[in-house]
Length: 233
Ligand code: NAD
Ligand code: ZN
Image (tube, rainbow, N blue to C red; front, side, top):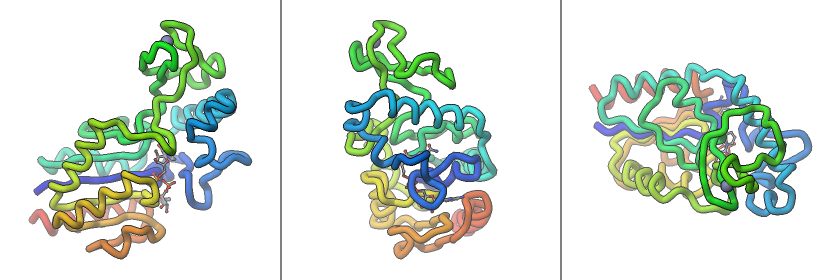
């Protein structure tokens, strides 16, 4: 029995990390969907880095919540279990998850636009904005996937394959509006998986679900696990 989970920003909401969409999803007067783009970075790397520096500080102070922990426990008790995340905050790994596929990169990674070197930089706040490459002094960018950019091929291929093979596909805290990640639940469903959703709001995935839980990640995931136990019993 293969269980595959797709998470989005909603699973980290209870850790105090704002989502992009939904009522608490804003930073000052800027729209994240207008800031997390290559165009925004080309126009004003300092502004984009200030926003990332703010998010990195928030994430550094945050703790994984019950939802992250339940998924780490699921991995321990289900042999064929995989977690695909759109999140860049690394909270799944901090909660103990190991089989994590990061579709949109990681906020602690930086990439040099000059020498192309990529490395982890955990300083928050950063000493200099925009930060410079420790190897060549070139301009760094965040090691995340922005709107309009393609996803890392390896991670995406693995995610497609797992979604096709899944017996149970669980979607948690994603608005299912960002492609190609939003495609994965539909691929799973078409390939015969049971589809379970945890989200306080309805999403485009909701009508296709076998079980849809209108709950926050922590309470919804407890119930989702009971459902999964029924299928795996
Ligand atoms: P989104 O902001 O588009 O949607 C968030 C979803 O979470 C909404 O459907 C909302 O109803 C739901 N939600 C809100 N509170 C919840 C809770 N307590 N429990 C469960 N669900 C809850 O997020 P997305 O679909 O992940 O897409 C946005 C993109 O933004 C992603 O690509 C991601 O990389 C990025 N992002 C990441 C983080 C992070 O790493 N924590 C935070 C914000 C945005
Ligand atoms: Zn460099």
